[in-house]
Image (cartoon, rainbow, N blue to C red; front, side, top):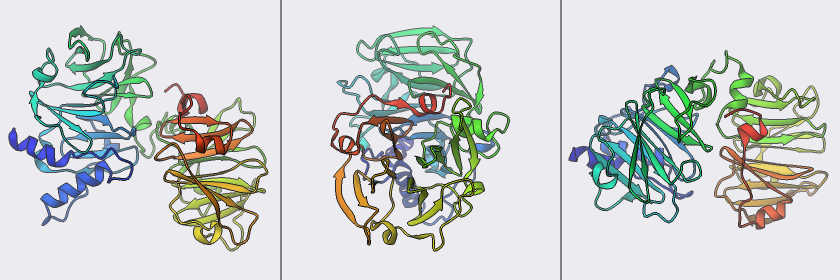
Length: 436
């Protein structure tokens, strides 16, 4: 057991700052350090073949990490990486505690194995860990199946739900009291996740959404995890690209509207287009079927003077708007040549008939005059998010997309000067009309 947790310490050094190496980078770096003489670091397992996860946990920025034995996946698209073999002795359960904010456990990540719990906070192991589960969470059994936090308002009090077989142990964080509930109607959860204020029990390669207080199943379940929580070819509702792409919980890469009022949202190899009637909703198509030179995974898209500008891999592609979407002769061109800025960028948008494109890169927004030759940055302003996935501007103001949510601002300047985030909106339900 001690060897396991020494390895655990080495492997699970989480980075919670936006500028530090990512979780998976650190995991791979540690794996490389331990196995420098080996030359196979990429895992062979594919979660799209159907995987029953040992644990699922989010980091402070909302990135989801999936664990199965000696393998780990980050987010919706990344392939598995193989972590240290000692680590493959298994994680039984894991959760990231966000609430209550005043708790000494705030923003700690907890990992469970047999009768031990391990805690990580701000890039390092918490002193004194590992500890017995009974010491940190009295009344909680050993050899857990799953765990998930449940803040006050969604549960009666700030709590953690621990799963073992068909029983759930609701642990009150403040009072350290436990209520045991038999939820025999739920499948045995091998992992659990709180995502967008919804609760999911994962079992086999399926998941079931449940109410965190009563355990009641909410909606028509089980559903296949590959339809919603990862990007897998030929998965969706009956193989329907529109349903799969529209209701995926993955972040958007870009979003814009052209001069004809057609709205486009981009994610991976697909784009979603809002139908002309709007009542018919969004429909998905492969990006390459409409913009033949773009293969997917765009960094930013914006509309200006009857043209759509795509930023991808340090290049700018410009297409005429309309039914044909013809690539302008001479393109693609380097981003630096076209817009006077180095990549990579996160988002870009133009408001109405203004000549300014607002390009977001890391935590700054750069204003570039599109009427000037050569183009150059007029000003740079800090923005209130460490990373933004997409942004667009319309008659109702600015929408900024961060992970599974978007935020509304009246003007670009108010967005840049804001230090208090407005009410978040859910992309999947409030923009794309899904039930997740």
